[in-house]
Amino acid sequence: MNPSPDLADPAAEPPVRGLDALAMLLSGLCLLHCLALPVLVAVLPLAASSLVVDERFHQWLLLGAVPTSVFALGWGWRRHRSPLVLWLGFVGLILMVFAAFGVQFEWIDAAGERALTVAGAVMLAIAHFRNYQLRHHGHDHSSPHAHS
Image (cartoon, rainbow, N blue to C red; front, side, top):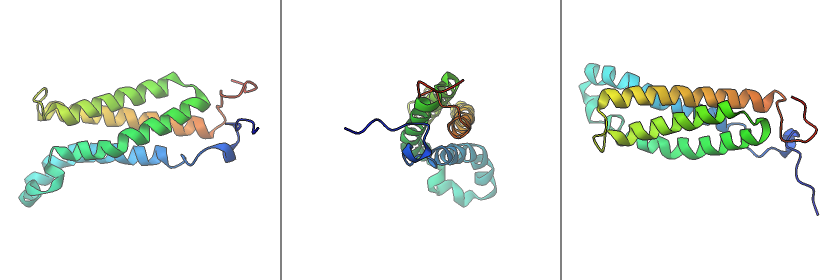
């Protein structure tokens, strides 16, 4: 019978090192899409007919962002037990999901979508940045012998 892997041992960590970075990239793409799109459409009217203008763009990005975030933040929670990281990530994801679908169901307008996406993406990026810091700088609370 194999003992359970020691989560403090970097070799025991699954390949999640890049997941926080990937999740921050996906959040950043949502943020960039929301902030740059009005300028892009005004400057390049041809862009108005492209995929990035489509409201489903955020929904497609969420297909990658949600599972990546859940996995990376969940694995980080197992190591550092930071409730702040979980709450920032959870609220950020909820805001982004609501923004992505809220306009479609006419619960919010374009300005509301933009504000919720920006707030959610920033919160999620902060959660992943902090998750990365805690996972890689010795804040392991998963071991019974870990020190605070």
